[in-house]
Length: 136
Image (cartoon, rainbow, N blue to C red; front, side, top):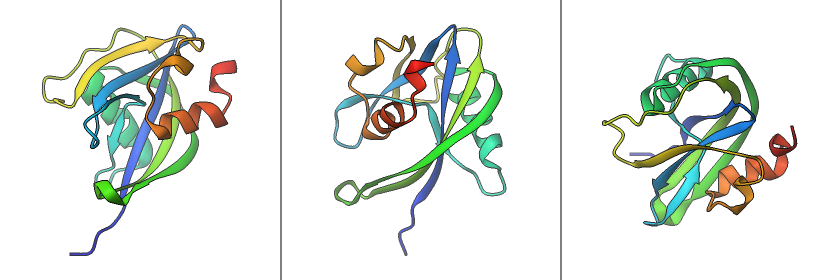
């Protein structure tokens, strides 16, 4: 079977000037903070996938969804290749972890000052370093 990249959406959900991140244990068995999201289903738009994934993972509704950029995460040694479409959105409420999402260890909102001190996955670091999100 031919290997193909996976199409993924991730949403930087913002509330009261803070950004939602989730902690997961990744393929290298280390824990990282990542931008929540997941795979796009066949027949689903990127926007529909973004809304669905945040609802499924952390129980949050989104508004003012806006595409920021896309990025590739390619790690052949972990048999991992994704094309990530990053969105920015606003939200309200507190994240509630889904019992079905076993990989998610924790979810929390962080201020722009806290984010640079977190153990971020490389794609999240790229996003925050290159898109001035922490300055707004």
